[in-house]
Every structure is written in C-alpha cells, then in structure tokens.
Image (cartoon, rainbow, N blue to C red; front, side):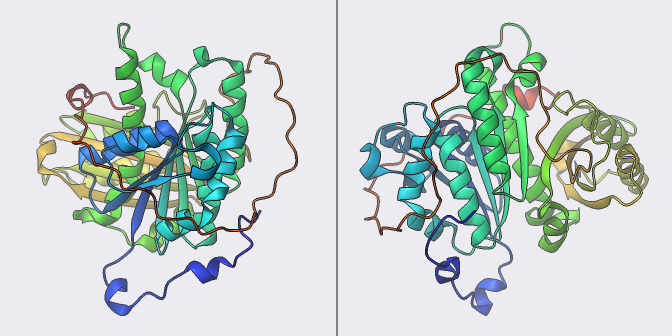
Length: 387
C-alpha cells in the first residue's frame, strides 16, 4: 500500500562517511494527543540516544508540548483544530503533510511510533507516518495503547480497526491494552496517574530496545541484530519486571514473562526474543545465562532467534531489571483479542481511499514557543512493580 506518488528514493539523502560513523539514528514520533504525551514523558525521563518529535492536528496541544520538534498535521484541512475523534479525518490530515513527515524521518535507522488508539489523530494518522517510515527504509516499530473499556464499544472498534491498519504498515507493533493496565493499579488511582502509568509502559518498551544499542553496557548489540529480530515480525508482546536480592535476574526474568499485560499463553510460540537486562556491576554471568535460558525455554521453540544486551547502571544496586520483547508468533497472524467487544452502531462506510494523493509542499510550521519540561511523576520509580 503506497503512500505517495513520488518515489521515496527521492527523499533519501546520501549519507556521508562522517555521518555514517556516528552510528544508527533512532527517532521517536508521538502521533496525536496520547502519543505526544508519552513522548513528552520519555523526554522528561532523559532517554539517551534518541530524537523526539510530536505530530498533531491540534495547534494548541502542540504549543503546550515541551518537545522541541513539532509537526502540525492538516493545517489547511483543520485550521489548527482537532479531528473530532474521526480517524478518517486524522488520516487525511496526515496525507496533506506527507512531504513534511518524510523530511523529518529522513535517514533514520529506526523509527518508533507511539499513539493512543481509539481517537482521531493517533488512530488515523499513525499508519500514514508508519508507511512513510518503512518506505524510507527505517526499521519501523509502533508501540500503542488500546482504550479502556469504559470509553465505549465504538472507541474500541475504532482502535481495533486502526491497529490492523497500523500493523500492515510497520515491522513490529506492540499494543498495550489499557484495560489490563487498569487491573494492575490500586483502587484510588487517579485518572491522571493511570494515564501516566500507560505512558510509562510505552517508555519502557522504547527504552528496552534502544538501551541495548545506545547505552554503554557490559554487552551491547549492533543495530543489525535488532533489525534481524524485529524486521517484518508483526505483532509482538512486552513484559518487564524488577527483582532484588539473590538470583535477582532470574526472578525478574520469571516475572517479566508472566507479566499480566501479556496475552494468555505468554511468549509461547515466539520466533524472536529481544532481552534487555539492566543491573549494576554486581550482576553475575551465571545469573544472566540462567535468565536468558529461562526466557528462551518459555517460547517452546528450539529455533528462536535471541538477541540480548546487558546494560550497566550502578544505581540499580542489588536490583536487576529485565525487559522482554517477544516477536514472530507463528500461532497467529492477527492481534490477540482482549475480549469480545460489545455491539456498537457501525460507522457509515467511507469512500475507498488511496494513500497516494498529490504531494503539495507545505510552508514551514509557524514558530511555537517551548514550555518548561513536564514534571515526571516519581511514584512509578518508587514502586518496584513494573508493567
């Protein structure tokens, strides 16, 4: 499914030797309100080695974001307003600005796309951004959230439809069901805290992958290892946990692969594993070996492709954090169903759309002021349970 009438090769730049020596470039793009919020929080947490950008139709929301790189979508179509929750409008807004989106992606080696599915901009525009990233040669990974049940069946149906379209345009997609996350939060959690927790799950997924390459560690991996594990792998699942004390790595590994956010059946059947083990210099070789073996055996496959990294962080002390990304599930070709969705009034059918409109050069976005960094909540760091 092509997005542009122009040849994507025309947008690629020749990489000079000096730039190539700097290594792979990672870009995280937040699409829509939910995705932009998650990216702002990632930036506030100080993720290293990645570039951040937010894309939205809502000019007011863009202006309030602390992320310096901002791309307004559909300025002509929407005049700086939102989409009214309509994914079709979100898609058309992104199609209006394919050239500017592609110019930002440029020569990125890997592009993470974050969005909250179920609304207008994230659901409709994220597949457009993803398709452009893939056409430009970037390893493209979408990390998205699915709506809470109380948001209604129509919102859930829009999210499922958007997820299917997104999956067709990325190498790997990790979908976090907010409803399962809700079950992990204590009663009395505020709505704002719940949203922050969802944002933090997205951050952990991005950081779990990027740290293996960009953060100095005991064992780092080349970008080609990540590409081999994640390219064209389809739907993936993520689990992460922290344990403390004797055999902490093994305990964290066991908790990560039984994380409540994982689909029933866990990582059984996965064809690829990306494992990030973060600990202090006290982390033992045998612990790492046993933790990786435990996770590999949980797939039930002898041919699983395993890529792992060991990141050094002295602040971990006696604790060890394990993040597992499981990909390449042979037992399914579509996203796991969280529940049977309640019936909803079907949306009216839209006219057949193509992702190949004429590309109209857009004027540069108007200058917007940057706000102070958001205040990152500390309760998630204090709570040792990770999602």
